[in-house]
Amino acid sequence: MPQPLTLEMADLMALASDAQRLDNPPGQIPPGALTGERVSRQQGRGLNFDSLRRYQPGDDVRLIDWKATARLRTPWIRLYNEERERPVFLLVDQRLEMYFGTRLQMKSVAAGNIVGLLAWRSWHDGDRLGCAILGDDELALHPCRAPKRNLMPILTDVQRINAQLPAHYAQHPRQTVSLSDALQRIVRLLPSGSWLGIISDFHDLNARCDTVLAHLRRRCEITAYVTLDDLHRRLPPRGQLSAYYQDVSTTLNLTSTLSDRVQQSVTERLSQQQRRLQRLGITVKTVVTGEAVLPQLQQEDVHAGKRI
Image (cartoon, rainbow, N blue to C red):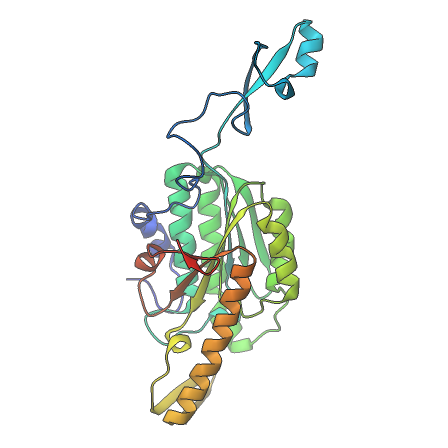
């Protein structure tokens, strides 16, 4: 069973088999995006250079390789094929705001499990894998590389930064790395045409984030995994809520009126957050801490306000 407060390396390693059950691998080109089931050998029908061959009547003159033509003194054209895999890059939030949970696991643990599942699936599929782990006072960067080289360093850094959260919780350090800072840093690490998964509660999503996300969206596909606690979805209708922070505890007497007011405010904020991401063309998945992560990842996506 996963540890509810922090991630254990053994649990991240155990996700290897579960990752094979993901229905929509992150690095896979979506069905219907390309025609046919195999790599195209037709000239001019893809993006990846494949080979050269002599020009034949009817070939597209835009495909002529002028350097080869000049060197060989006869027309040659460039052949391309379609790419069916794409690099996978993960940005995971492991800051103090993620160290919260009322049922089953912390938001930070759920986020770490999402990274583990997606990273292991990339390993199974052979997709190039990169990652950025966002902590309170550091941003660990792993450029896209072959998964056999990158998987273990990524999982190690995720577990290491997650393990620092209990100490940060006691000290409550000043946050030095924002979501917008992290997004700006990964721009140069993302190959064009890659898939980007952002795992966070998006508590500091702002106009600066919008600008960078809009730029990234023009270059790659983006999925936002909005990680929430059960209390974000529904409060108890009435009763007492106990809260603990460091050595301080308090009890809140919750009435029906207060519960409704708080729930309305939280629901509206989350709806605005989702609409904001969808306006940028970002696919949105909501993951809650009170349920197992894998079944939630297998549910349908929400994209641009529609189910797909």
